[in-house]
Length: 380
Image (spheres, rainbow, N blue to C red):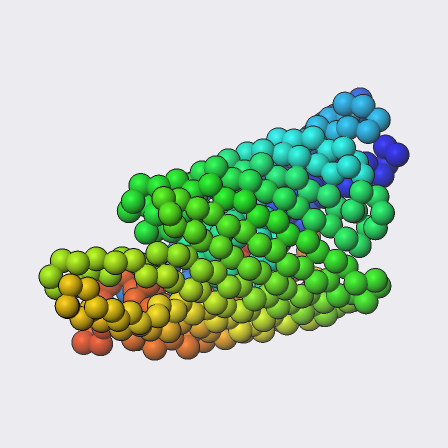
């Protein structure tokens, strides 16, 4: 029973850590503590007016621990910190949570952790340098890391099947708020669930989830579905996300009259990777396609004998083809290269979002430029 329990608890501690190795600093009398870290020296080469261009160097340090409370209960915790050393020079506590694992009855933890839909975004968030667009709490609810979340997970359906897992989550924080909510000063409560099924011994996993939040009459909900295939050296991943933000955009007419309109976001991501063993290390070429669109319906109505009209749009926020590779010299050191073929037009919403400094006579043109990402990664 104890060995089975540890096999369930340890992956729960290291989920999304991204560390291929760690240093065990304590292991005695049922207590275990590991440290792990990563230094990433990278640069995004593109137009100087584009968001996130230039230096992308960062460092992470984390720890995970567990303690055997009884034969059937394990306590665990995790903390991870990241410091950006590039032009933004920012820092963030990525994870800070603690919980209890009850074996076949599942686990419960609270703190700063992944949103419940992150399990689905992870299917395609595997690119060498870019990707992860679906992991955006401004677009989708509980799709990325967030604070003040209480999560219940069961990785083997109460001991009945190692191929089926599910999670339930509740959040009481502002990290799940869109820009519209931050303007109103609202703080979202949110809840969600996911389920994943490893389909027998085929290497195929299907997953889906739902999350919803509300604040001051506004409802933001997200549906997600994904597939991934892992078999020997081949990896294939796909996901689809659909979100609706009720009363998400405030429209103002020339006479000062205002009314809110609903916003919809739909997107999908596809990725294919193949690992090739070399005499020294392993290289993994990567090919991906990412597209996310925002849709705002047109509005027309009469009020006090005045006809009101506001046009709608259906515009990409992210649209690109990615071609790259990761070269793992060993389990601790890697090199990465990735070229993003940007398919945005300068009239697209995404081009405006990706432009920080206007250059030339064409508005938002920097946001349409291709990007080359290169980097070195050391991790332990």
